[in-house]
Amino acid sequence: MTLPAIRPDVPTKLIARHRTIADIVRLLDSWGFDVGNTRVSVWTILVVLIIVVSLIFIARLASRAMAKMLERWTALGPAQRSLTEKLSNLAIWAIAIFTGLDLLGINLTAMTVFSGAFGLAVGFGLQKTFGNLIAGIILLMDRSIKPGDVIAVSDGKNSIVGQVSRIGIRAVSVVTRDKKEFLIPNENLMINQVENWSYSSRDVRIRVPVGIGYDSDMELAERLMIQAALDTPRVLADPPPAVLLLNFGESALQCEVRLWVDDPEEGIGNIRSGLLKRVLKLFRENGVQLPYPQRDIHVKEWPAPPPRSGKES
Image 1 (cartoon, rainbow, N blue to C red):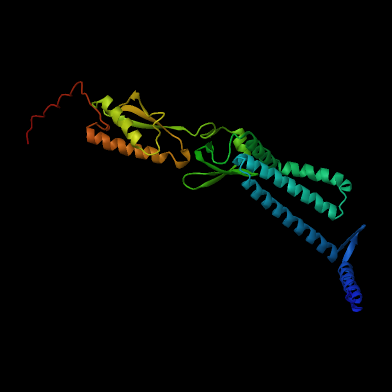
Image 2 (cartoon, rainbow, N blue to C red):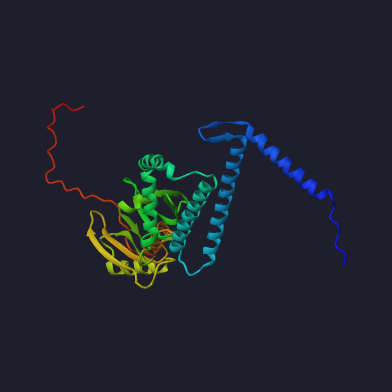
């Protein structure tokens, strides 16, 4: 068997190519200056940029791969998957940062004093950010609030009711029925009172006030209101709707229809509207009097007419 002959010009080309690369490196390194024992040149800056960009690309690629792997792992719930994804992202970026420092030849022991002062400054400046980060991890661990829950949060004036879309590092995304997305800091959900309508059960009771006239048949009106509640879509038959007489108002008997739904994320206002429309229709069909404001005026003593002057026109 005859071996192929080696061309005598191949080693020469390789040596020439290596010399060319070395010349380019020396040329780029010559464009710079020295700071103490550190050389700052075009070549060093280029190396730093290549390392930083490469590590960022690898870290993002690893984070996306981890997210896809967690999506396929159906054994984890939404909250557990989100927590695992955030912790894995923190670990990936920490590894990338320390790897970059090692590749760049930065001595961490020499930066102990500087890193301590820098860490103290960052701690004061970003204490809210770190507080929100820890609060988000706690929320995901104790599962008091998780993606998909319907919560009510007060902003001091109004109450925001919506479904939790995602729990981020800094804030929780809450989407209302108006498709408005509110970003509520995680720390606010830890220190303020929050109503979670889906924490232990998705069943939510809705109260709808209804007034009837004093001359109406109370038993008939009660049956009609229960029938209207059962005919309203999304209202549960178990527990059954109930009607309570709350008070004797000025112009009407003040009643309240109490009913249950198990899908609060679909909204509550449409349930109230649908029930009241059906109550109005049934009341009119069965002669139940609808209330309206009225006043009775009793005159105890009518004043005497003024005396006539004797002159008639």
